[in-house]
Length: 176
Length: 403
Image 1 (cartoon, rainbow over the protein chains, first blue to last red):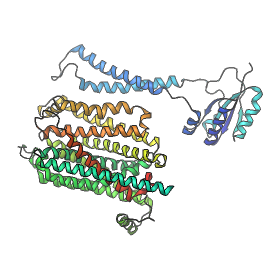
Image 2 (image 1 turned 135 degrees about the horizontal axis):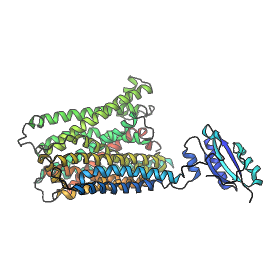
Image 3 (image 1 turned 45 degrees about the vertical axis):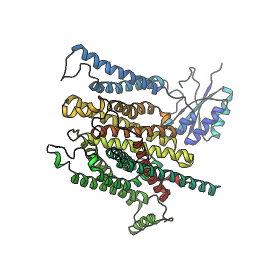
């Protein structure tokens, strides 16, 4: 199978990006990704991304941390069995402090792990099919098509009001 | 068509206000019957709990608007204007406080006790004088803030009604630029926030903590005002949800608004529990009999221990796990239910704090139908106050503007 052509439409307006994404999704071209210099709710909505799993990582981390924090406090207290100011060895009320702190710690770790795994970081191939102007004042919409459709895709982007950049074909599949 | 809609709205509003007037009548009747019965102290207990709860709701909700202005927040949108409508309860709250003076013999168990030197602070003339002045300052600052805040919103071409006309005349006398008004709002709002913390501390100490005069907790005042903001936010969400359900998209209150104010409500739910916990922690470690008896009676001994767990579950555990979910926070109906339950929970929490001091050696929790009916009377008062504000200043609340 001949390699696909990768073409990026560079937009200056957020709204045009949104309409380009919507039309691209309905066309026969393969929509790949958007590079944007700023976080944009409009573009996020247009992409219709699946719900992120990061929250579940955070929740699991928090629950594990909660159990771990209490377990740590109870375990260390029972190692010595020292009665401190007439309180029971396993004194739940003050252990809430340890339990709470470790819950937060667990949630943070869960969140970071979730973030790294779900965004597929670290990435060393992001610069493939990338235009540095996307870190400046342009939004880049990247799409792929068969070699014979190249002109059609270029026209499509131009009609949407974009500046077009055609990438040289690279053999490997791009990192999305 | 629009005229028809407006007429239906007006009929509905008249009907609703009749219902609330009926609630007030039921509340007053129950209270009077309670006073005439053999246990007038029970009626006064319900009165005190409701006074504390509904005043705190009004004060806390107005605080929301002041805080939004002070922090330059834009996310609150129409909610800010909506929260100002709770200021209409201020005069009612003040009168309700004055009425409390009549029940002094029933609501201050320390009146005939040996206070071991505390009588300098805990005596009726001084207590009522300082609380009257405190509430007066708080409410004046609240109205001062509102006076400026409304100036930016009201439509000067419609000076209907006596109150509106006098306010417009006051504005015209000293004509100001919008920047000037905003600066004045900052000053009044800042002072209101400060007074809120100080006066609610005072009310918490005087009307709640002093019921058990030998018990002290320095954090009690802060606990009281954090709780007030917590339920103020709850009531604001309820009002916003009602308007959203009745008017739909036209209200201008979007799912995002519910999500954001829901997050704040969730945050204050945590903060309330935190303030409870830090007090408990110090008492637990100190283990001084003078301090521990208060907690033991309320959380470990029957009949109050069950109520303590109910309050803890209804006001913290339940909302905590439910509000973790993002989608629930964006649904007006669900938020309406959750916030109503939390406010009922805080009502019970007031009963938990005051009950053991007011009903010594109670075998069961002193709770009956009459408490509920008196509370409904206060609900009616709050609803009538808010309804009146929205009627006089329809454009202050963007939700009613479209109608």
